[in-house]
Amino acid sequence: QVQLVESGGGLVQPGGSLRLSCAASGNIFRINAMGWYRQAPGKERELVATIASSGSANYADSVKGRFTISRDNAKNTVYLQMNSLKPEDTAVYYCHLRAIMFPPVDYWGKGTLVTISS
Image (tube, rainbow, N blue to C red; front, side, top):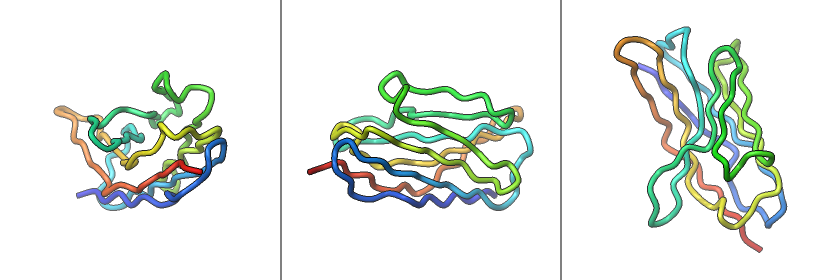
């Protein structure tokens, strides 16, 4: 099993910054992709950003140029640096890990709340 623990959420004013962290522990498959999804009230969960073990990253159009995903493979940790935050970024942010095997296996964190408000 794999456990994902998020941290770094909170309340910040529009235009501000936050950095989310997610530490993975347990039986982690070496080849994996980690990432962040978010779910705003009344909306479906959506992709924010993902990053492969190789470092290749992918972003939702809504966060390109504002958010940066990174990972430390030695620490099994993924980060999400969020800048120029907007009220519409308000959501619960979930850490995700996909073990690249056949079939792939998905793991989720419990989520951390990010609120953008003045």
